[in-house]
Image (tube, rainbow, N blue to C red; front, side, top):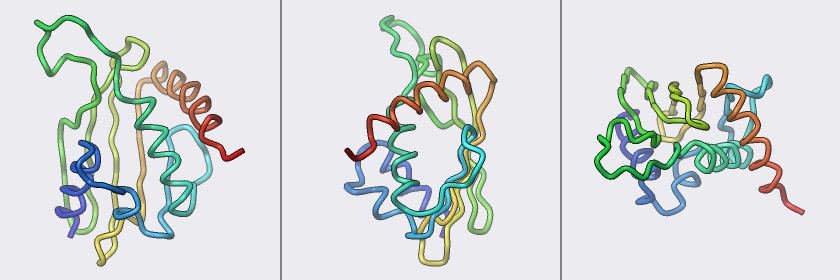
Length: 144
């Protein structure tokens, strides 16, 4: 089941899965942030965090067309490990000009819905930058 969930996750990340988070996330999904101490429980809060991350972690834009794709600084997955109902997806990106990497740990239920999304991220300078950026993005996303 996790293989299909990861396939759909990648389609969502490419913008090819309309309403991707609504399709992928279980109503009782739990999001574990590298920034926030407490788990964030529920589909709506998980969606908010994942959408904010999508806005703050696309990576720094590079203008040099001769640069290799792998060193473009944009967010990309580099490794996948799947077992049972859990996948670990390693990613790389840049944050404020600094290399950063981490993992998304995704757990699904038997219905193919994500029930847990855990993010681990490094190094500290990148975490601090993401903390600032995510805080600003989440503030902008709050309903008025």
